Length: 52
Picture 1 (cartoon, rainbow, N blue to C red):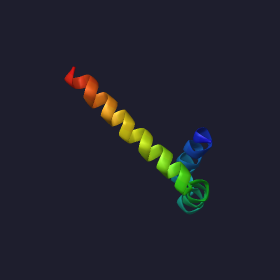
Picture 2: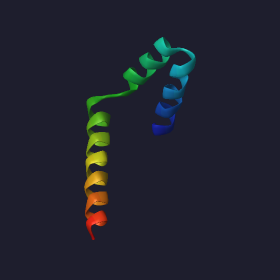
Picture 3: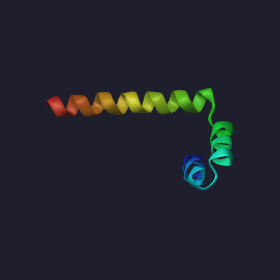
Picture 4: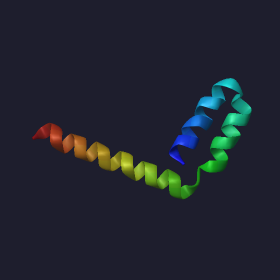
């Protein structure tokens, strides 16, 4: 799924209207929440390792 989304994002360069339509159809609340939580956990982990 991640590779497909990356391909859709790359396609926005060629045809922005169609590319954004594909990306929006793939994204859901669950995907956005999962990615957001992953980013927060990664940030917290990197920060804790930086202090050590």
